[in-house]
Image 1: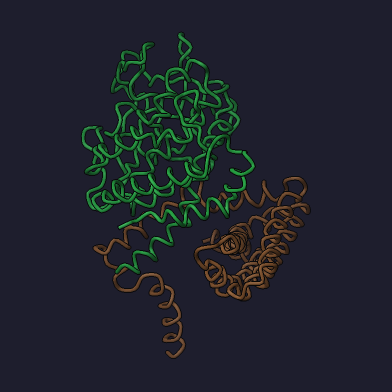
Image 2: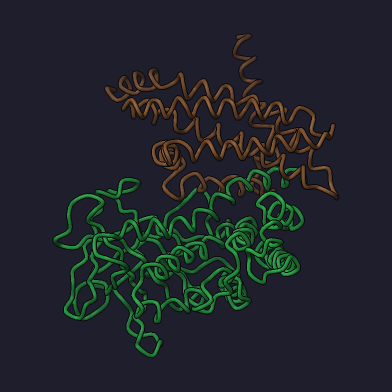
Length: 193
Length: 322
């Protein structure tokens, strides 16, 4: 029972942190935004299909050089963050650099699977890989917004993002590189009914 | 209610998406930073003052279907008319056909504001963008002359008909038939589902882009062609002719975007016309329809995904307000 009480509180954190009681009430309008937004992961052939496109068609572009050049571009933003020498960025550069390392490792792993003909393994990691890449790139762009700022201190947003979300990248990398076998085995069991 | 965060969008556009750099390097023609600011400011005003107030009724009343006629929520038709007459649909359209030829990044920023104000409303013009792209890139000169100007201005809207009851992400299973007619046009027979704004009362004509299979087409995705099927046929002088046999059979009851009619469309079921089949015109080459529609989708896609990540911020903002 102690375990149940603990887990419920952890889950509650997720449901309440975005919109507490009022967010659950239709009249406040927040509920409509949540319901309307559900179409976004479905339009354009679903996020899952987009993830497959990302892994199977975009990663192999120019023999993998296209994705590497993009990651290098993102890294150059972090160089600029270091160069700005602005305390407001906190650990932004260091943490996002780590996040890009995770992206790179996951990318290399996926490219290796595909070149060995293990397409199922690569596809299994496509959705967490999409999320991993999105998280890391999102942080870099917030940092870029913070760099070119004269009126407001947007660096604090980049710092918040990096210091609160970047750590998820390591977990997602592990899912990409370590989750495929179990997904395929469990999938067979569920298919068998 | 939604208030467009114009300063944030402007900062992101210029500093993060490198528009400032492109402006300074003269890569965007004679576009100036002042004009960019003016466009964003006015778009923000229209989104906040005209579109956002429609959003509650859009949800609680929604789009309604009766006798194959769809009525959109209160205010949609008037607002759409003002919006398109204000030039917003034409913002990035080709200048040759009455568009303003402004950079796509500016159009995407404006689109984000329409969608944030009321997604159910903004989905309508989003689909038109795809139709413009397909006709402009792959359409014959005749199709361009007849349809593009009205699609670019927004006087008519466009739809994208891919999905069928037994064919979603995998288009290889597509069944809708297209039969060649003697006059070079085609007759379309089949059912399409999930057609955003497949029928509505906001414009006098709707241009359906429909994927279908020719009688001798190869199996799978290499045997799919793209057709333009207008709700009303268009005479040579540009006036509207007979009602085409393309009808909305039902609209879906969805979890959200209630303002946007998601239609089941029936082509060539014999509701209208003297001979069987909905009249359609080939876009691009036979059996190359998938490539045409993917190009069109790409244009729509950019606007779509920008919107997705802004959504989370809006929910947060709502929460702060309450």
